Image (cartoon, rainbow, N blue to C red; front, side):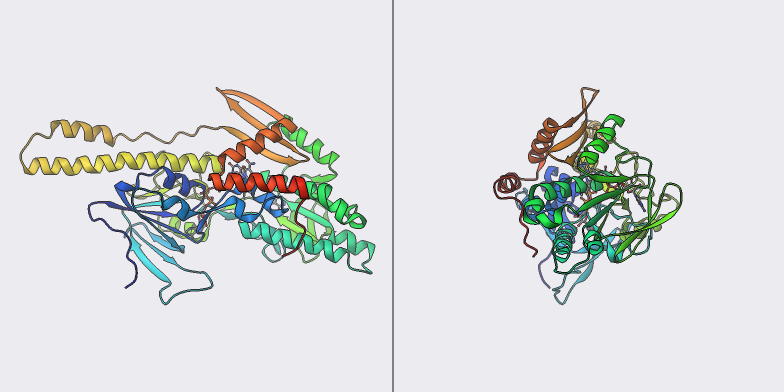
Length: 462
Ligand code: FAD
Ligand code: NAD
């Protein structure tokens, strides 16, 4: 009956759900000789999300920011099983997980349930649409690699259609109006990248059309980038003004139609604006599988935004066997890669201690059977029982805003430091280059940047 999961009965089974920031940080740092480890994720790769907007405009190739998860697991001390599948449900009482292969090609078996001793639940979040009509049907998202690829295809489609002979002026303006919904970092970075694409490439390739390209950012709140300091928000707004990117704050998208967006303006009047392409970057919400898991523990899981955990990242309401990390949780921290990866590293360290604790417990039982002294073992066990709570260390916030400028709110030795401009852009590039997953990714990204400098972005629509 097919390949079996690696199972050493003397070790506990850890199932890791997801292959994003939190899960890979955990796997990178876990000593797999202590556990039977299985990874379940519908994506058999890790995606470096901070550079996703660069893929959307063709500055980077998709593969440059992806790394197969097996690249990581095959170097571990004991075999780790990777299963490309989507978790469908988790039973926190029976301690089982049910998952299914939802890809185009499936074998005779495509769904199963397995038990776990520990579950590392790191499925991330999905894009929040607030049920606004037309978002799913007509907008592009900016969360997964397919979203960036789809965006690039649609964007080039708008340009080529605008160049079709006989197109009216109004239709050209509509097709070339790009609307970005959400003035969070995703929306702002994408708008900045779009502006670069326009300035660096489209102006020379499509001189007759480029002047009609218009980028508008729509934000419901009174300000964009609320997580940055006032000074950097103002710097971003003035850079966007120079770049001719319109920012409409206090404006809410109420509906997206095939060729227009319906806006509620700050004075509450409604306005319908023609658009060629809409990107939706409206924030996060819990995935259906997380909502289902939370509904099984209604007394402890009351927060709809995500899973409630204690300060050791144990899911509230469970007996300490399910740990939740990253964007699937709702904590005092922002849903960022920084938080997710620090949580993954913390848990891997904790799992080293848990393995030590469990091994000591077995030694105590054996010593008692042999009627030898357990005093020293019990002292060590008591020490291993003391688990340190998770502590987040904020390294600062960094975002690219286009025109080779970036903004950074950094913290050095508890001192806050804000900067924006070209030097920050170089810092942004070097910081991301050094945090990429592997040397392979670093070489590919650096080569892509060089290629764009020499030959411009690739305009072919695949
Ligand atoms: P993810 O990285 O999203 O990983 C979730 C994993 O779970 C994925 O592998 C997914 O395939 C898998 N999964 C999904 N459903 C299931 C299921 N049913 N069963 C099993 N597995 C499942 N943060 C920063 O700190 N700095 C940045 O510069 C930054 N830039 C960003 C740019 C963009 C465009 C975006 C979208 C986000 C950015 N973020 C940034 C936020 C950051 O990406 C997230 O906070 C981070 O990805 C959260 O990590 P995670 O592991 O919780 O989730
Ligand atoms: P976000 O939640 O930060 O921003 C979404 C924005 O969309 C909000 O400001 C919201 O008011 C707005 N919005 C929602 N519905 C709207 C509507 N109908 N009309 C108009 N505006 C609407 O989401 P994000 O930008 O995708 O970021 C998600 C997380 O990822 C955040 O924690 C962020 O810090 C992190 N992130 C960080 C970076 C970085 O550090 N460079 C980059 C991208 C994402």
